[in-house]
Image 1 (cartoon, rainbow, N blue to C red):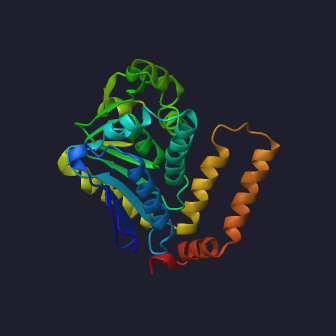
Image 2 (tube, one colour):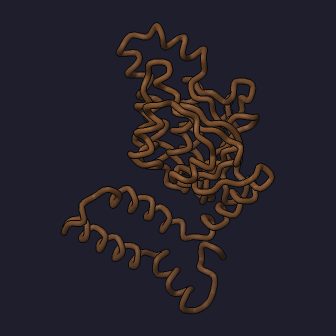
Image 3 (cartoon, rainbow, N blue to C red):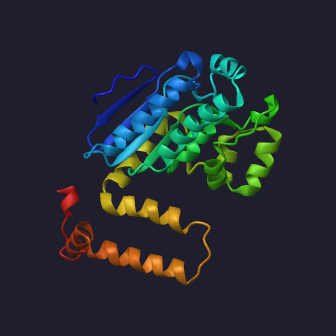
Length: 263
């Protein structure tokens, strides 16, 4: 890739892009530089034509400890307008991840705190090592998990959020799995293989269909099942059936051959 990053690594291996947080000495806590670089990395990976899946991971013992302490010290002196601008950049980063046209996998190798929980929630799929701990710690220091809340609520549900937003209790990877926040929990030595297995499934699917599925989920989730929604789903299947990849997929299935995007 053309961009040089200082807080993370971006690499492309075949159809899979890897974005790795790389400040283990700071427990991969983020600040304005990390936020800007993550935003740019997901834009670049999302736009790369060969990429069909993106894995977000981290080096070191922690996945992401939330906000960097030095950044928090600077924020303590911000005006309200400066806080709005700063939070807006974090919100843009999270939305860039969530709206990425390529499917995303969070590969969680260590503890996840505060804003780091938002990073995991913004990804489409999350795989966690069984020793990881999670914590929405904001209320302990007089704050709220505001910018990450749309993604965390979507990932764990309102009922679980009512506990963990309010209590700031740590919860285990097993609990994260029980409440639906992560999809898989594995031993450390099985983490890479499980992520690779899911990435393989994603890269074997029609790229156009995967993009359309991400849009479909966003359009349908939480909506009333009314005439307008039904009409939208009818249009959606009609559009994809008539598309080039849709036609090729059906033809290849009927002809018992690999579709063109795998050739």
